[in-house]
Amino acid sequence: MSVRVVVGAQWGDEGKGKIVDYLSEEADVVVRYQGGANAGHTVLVGDQEFILHLLPCGILRPGKVCVIGNGLVIDPAALMDEITMLRSKGIDVTGRLFISQNAHLIMPYHKLLDRMSEEGLEAGERIGTTGRGIGPAYVDKVARRGIRIVDLLDREVLCAKLTRNIREVNKVLEAVYHKETLDADRIIAEYLEFDKQIDAFVTDTSVLVNDAIDAGKHVLFEGGQGTLLDVDHGTYPYLTSSNTTSGGACTGVGVGPTRIDEVIGVVKAYTSRVGNGPFPTEFPAKWGDEFRRAANEFGATTGRPRRCGWFDAMIVKYAVRVNGISTLAITRLDTLDELAHLRICVGYRDGNKALKHLPSDANLLARCEPIYEDMEGWGQPTRHARTWDDLPQRAREYLSRIAELAGADIAIVSVGSRRDETIFV
Image 1 (cartoon, one colour):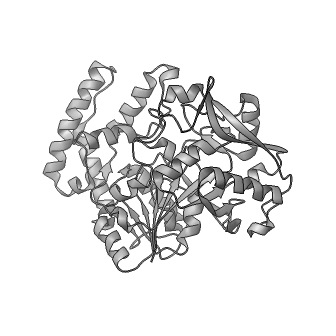
Image 2 (cartoon, rainbow, N blue to C red; image 1 turned 90 degrees about the vertical axis):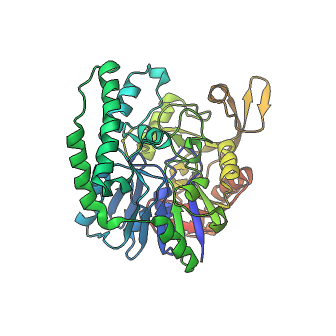
Image 3 (cartoon, rainbow, N blue to C red; image 1 turned 180 degrees about the horizontal axis):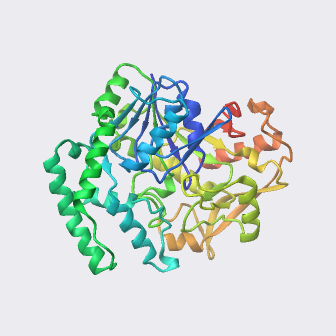
């Protein structure tokens, strides 16, 4: 029996989808514990590419039980689109997919408010939200006015809650944004229809997952986004609205922390981030564009270009600490194959002051200068490597230095997007 949590240890987009898919082979239950359809996990199975936003990556492996926990906010349209897409490709989710009755729903007004709020800000003030209603849905959850899946079971309760919420939203739409108001009856009818489509999947997933652990099953938890986007531990305010760190697995599913055996942190062999916010090791604009195109660094969910930069050991060391990361999975090593020289950020400097830890102040982080350590590249392909010894000597030195600086051993190295392009150390 093992209970593992897979977390992103940078700003998201680390390649968690492939790593979760790889580890799902030996898992019995795969559980998504936070976020929403703003996350995108890309998995290549043979020649087919799958982009999943809400469903756990384990759904791509036959016979695996998959769970969507209470920590998610669910867009009904996105969920049904994803299920339909899988069925069209011969993957049936019936009897394998279970959704928490306590998960909150994203309503049409959440997406509307998300977009208008972002559009109303000056360019330098924008967070870089995906506009999918994630933030406003979590706001309603914390404000205790959210709509949960369990509310769909009682028409009167649903009507009362939605009527109240839409009445308040309409006041904002009229007075602040000067927009047309929403039709409460239409939205209620739409969501009651959604209830019919997902009723067979809904259950108490906390009981399901804890029973699986008690029975000695292998359980794998997967999160969306990355540590530096965590609402408590990320580069505030440029982050997502949920707890992306390993602690989110406990609250987002309903399991105790003593049930977790291992936390695996996924990191790219370099660094990237989507959206606004400080990024000390970001490449200069022209070279960053060239690198991004060569590496195909565009968001799986939105297609937005990702900002790219050198590996930042400061943020990964921080992620190891706040997540309790046991081991690291390094992805996209092959992307660096042709670079003659590499740099690793080993610290920050604010003026004449060297910083020992990642600062909490985003403004301070934005003005920090990275302290670099230079290394020679290996200048040869790594995609053929299937063992640690198959890797070029300089690639092994680079990886070993990353592990040393981060304070965690390397368990997995990915040298390509295919399942077999993986080294288990």
